[in-house]
Length: 334
Image 1 (cartoon, helix red, strand yellow):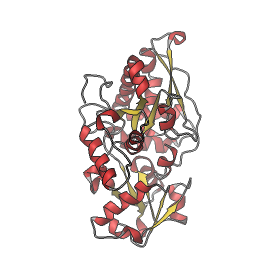
Image 2 (cartoon, helix red, strand yellow; image 1 turned 90 degrees about the horizontal axis):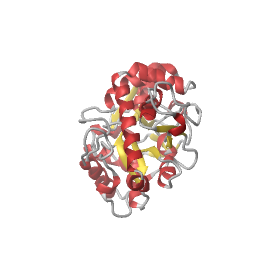
Image 3 (tube, helix red, strand yellow; image 1 turned 135 degrees about the vertical axis):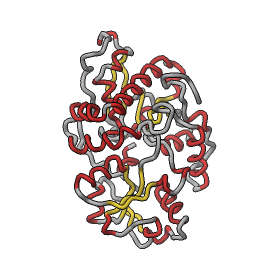
Image 4 (cartoon, helix red, strand yellow; image 1 turned 30 degrees about the vertical axis):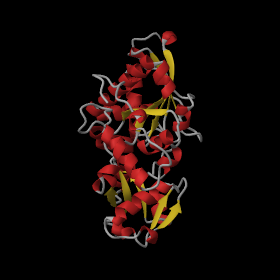
């Protein structure tokens, strides 16, 4: 959701709120297509390329769907999906876990990226090369308890004290402005902000979460829907998920063409950044999983246990109700 993405430095220019009309090449009659709404978690970026590829290549139409891609606005994608105001959305395991504990009926139906590519970034000249170096520094975030818990867990491994870190809410300030003006380090997705730093010629030091704990290798982002949609219209969920899977496979196999599709759909994006980001991210959509979108029970359980240990969950978390692989193409597994 919006606040979740601010910290990752996704300083995208606001681009159109709806998708293009269906492209040529689909086999469905538009008048007979089922209208479906898909809400993003933030402005369009390479996390979303598979959706735009599915649209441009006609994969949605081939399955009888007319998909409208919309922005979350102030409400947030999770809330729109949970309430049924959007049929599908983009979320993250962290926020979905919290939602499930609060009895919010949202379900993850696919992992968009197989491993967590986020971490704490800082300009190289600040000499922050490990979590121990966070002491005496200012962290720029969005004010959620999970931030301090994650930073503390990394610092504890090196005998450092999180109470010696100053926490500053940087609001909508982008990463590059913030580290020049107010903060020393922030939480980013390398696939966008890190690649942007490379293009700017600005060297970053990164501490990836996955280098410090397997329990922090959670799914972010994920494709979501709600329990009612699964119960009452499973055929639509299956058709939508299959088309999206095909879209991400297209992006895996054709990163250059996929980048061009995203640029064409959202022309306000920086084309150079999109192409470089897509080259970096395309192999990571599936990575070492048996198929795109596959989710593992252990990943969900490990992160929930970590959240519980750090006092971030207030209630019981039922792993098997939070996600399903049953709508992915080529077999059904849990």
